Image 1 (cartoon, rainbow, N blue to C red):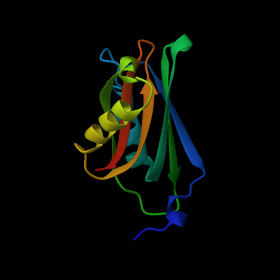
Image 2: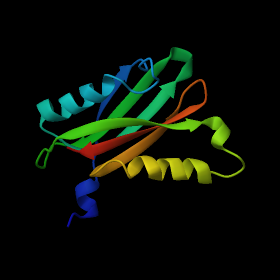
Image 3: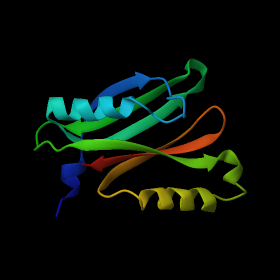
Image 4: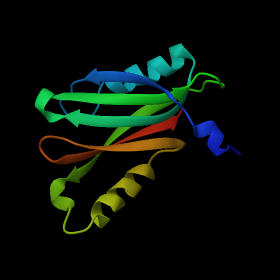
Length: 127
């Protein structure tokens, strides 16, 4: 079983690109996975932010390079529009749980919202 000390990390790599036509992270998913593989790192976390004014998506990958590397993959799943928020977040939470149930080996996740109010979930999984 892993310990919290194995999750602690202080190294980061930034990836920047445009949203794909379907508003997912598109080719950035492959760029992140390729970096993790070629750099031989142990990925620990992701951050995802859509900067509407610049029409750019920023993904940060947190990692360690002092332990055994493993392959990762990023998955981007649409959750629905901002209209799902009706006073509480129950519908969004359910959409997040439904999306996660379709993927094995989730390491971490991140949520982003597009300029049109669409929610997307990015999952980093062990491949």
